[in-house]
Length: 49
Image 1: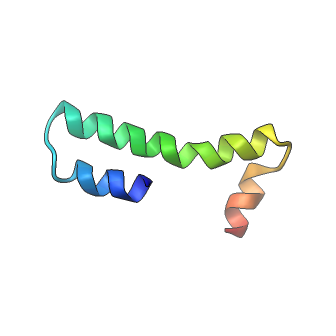
Image 2: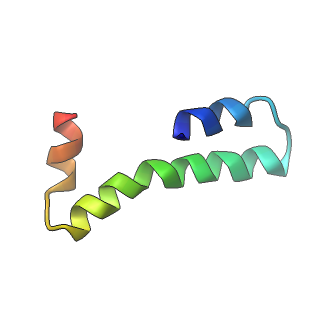
């Protein structure tokens, strides 16, 4: 989903592109936040992926 948002942001200009890019960054952070809340080492999980 983050990749789709980044692709879309390249076709849009101005504030909308910035908002879409921000949303894509937020989507990439969700797995890290969920892993940390579950008590796992998020850096290790991301590294393994």
